[in-house]
Image (cartoon, rainbow, N blue to C red; front, side):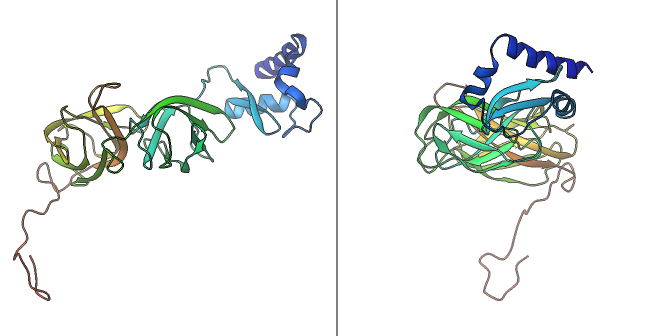
Length: 279
C-alpha cells in the first residue's frame, strides 16, 4: 500500500510540476515500450526494488524502493586499463544475471559477461581504445547506466601489459607459499589480497621476493579453505608505476598439507630419451 501510494504520488507530482513532458520528451504520443498501471509499477518495485522508466527503449528515470541504493562501480582491474586486454568490473547493487554492455568512450567492449562474485563483470578492451582518461559506461540488464572515469595506459608496452599469467600451486594450503608469474611493475612491494563473494578483502598475503616476472607470497596460516578472488596491486593509485591487476579465481585448500602443497620437486632423468620413462 505504501509503495502504491508513493508511485501514485510520484506520478501526480510529475504532472503537477510539469515534469512529464521532460520525462517523455517528444515521445508523448509514441507507443511506450511497456505500459504499467501504478499498481503494476508498485508490484515490480516491491519485487525488484526498482522500476526503470524508459521512453522509446531508452532509460530516462530510475525509481528505487525505500532502502534500495543505486548500482555503483567500486573498482575496475587492471588499473590502468590496457588496450586489447580483458578487464574486470566490480561494484555494489549490481544484478546477478542478465545481459550487460560496456563502452569506453565511443568504443564497445566485446564479450561483456556477468559472472558470479567475486569475478564481477568481465569484458575485452579493443586494441584501438585511446590512452589517457576515458569514461567507461556500463549498461545493466534493466537499462540502468553506470559510468566511471578510467585511465587507459600502455602498462609496460603493448604487448606486454602488466598481468598475471600463472600462479602455483592450486589449491594452496593455508600457511603455504604461492608463486605468481607474469609481467609486473618493479620498484614497489605488491599488496596481495584474497576477496570473498562481496569483494571484501578477507586475507592479505605476505610478499616475499618479487621481480618483473615473478612474485612469491605466503598465504596466512588461518585462511579458511574455499574459493576467493586474488587481487594484486603495485604502488600508489595515480602515481607512476601503479598497477592493479585483474582478479583471478584462487583456491585455498588442503593442498597436501600445511606445508607441503601439491608440487613437483624433482623429475629424472634429464634429458630423457624418446620412448623412455621419467620419474
